[in-house]
Amino acid sequence: MKGKRQKIPLGYSMTKAILDLLIDFGEHSVFFEDPLRRIWRSNRGIPAPKRWRYKRAMDYLESVQQIELETRNDRLFIKLTQKGKLRALLHRLDKDFKQRQKWDGKWRLIMWDIPEDSKQQRNRIRALIKNLGFYQLQKSVFVTPFPLPASAVEYLRESDLLQFIRFVRADQFDDDSALKRHYKL
Image: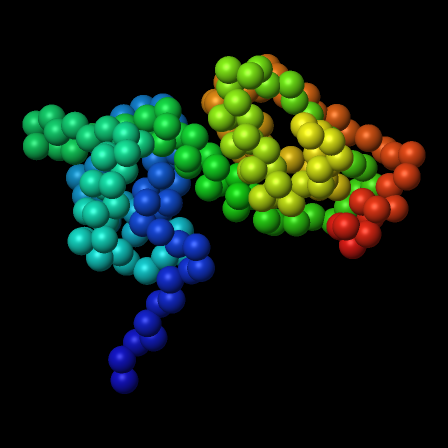
């Protein structure tokens, strides 16, 4: 009888696995004798990847300038670019925020005043915040009952937008019944 085939988790992609692994190593170039084997051994809940899938993902990440590849003395060095780091942090943020916690009775507000010359980033942040399930109180004021994961703050720091954004933790609102209904609290 053959062994059970390991299922690929929902939302899995080789590019996410590569970026997730690289962000764990930080700012330094990472040397891999065999990056494919390292990804598989990192135990990220994925089956052993096929070499063609890994190669295609690496080519894609290099073509969109999210990683830089360099060969020195027949060794492959991979460096995560700023663009790649932001994408990896977005993936991590999405994963971290979906791990809901019990409500502690406090509301978290995020508000910003991002300059017009960064309109594209402002719209991207707004879409991200909505996607994470924040409730929009005003055009650039959102609320959630759940704490922000550290990956959210790290993403904002890396995107150079943290200087325009403020976080507030509030015990109560004048009328939070609509918010409680929205979050089913």
